[in-house]
Image (cartoon, rainbow, N blue to C red; front, side):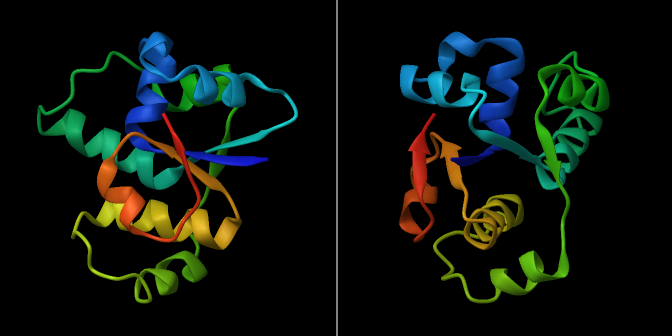
Length: 125
């Protein structure tokens, strides 16, 4: 199974995995699963840290490598796919993660209820 972690899911995995549901924790830990962290989430974390909305003491590049997740790059096909998404909400980071999950055939691991409005497969974080 391919999993794409929402930004908060990735942060919880790094800082407090107990916040995650048992199903999500088990799926992320399963070596048979491909676990992706989007470069979009890394960008969102960097922006939120810079403007003071997030005080996470993490080294993004080091932590992604340490936990063994694969960084999903942002490609033109992901950007184009956002045009086909309904405007349930306007958060560009969320919309890009939904598009990436759809294009990559991944389940988005999230606890954000607005993400369930889209047609992407969701696993509750």
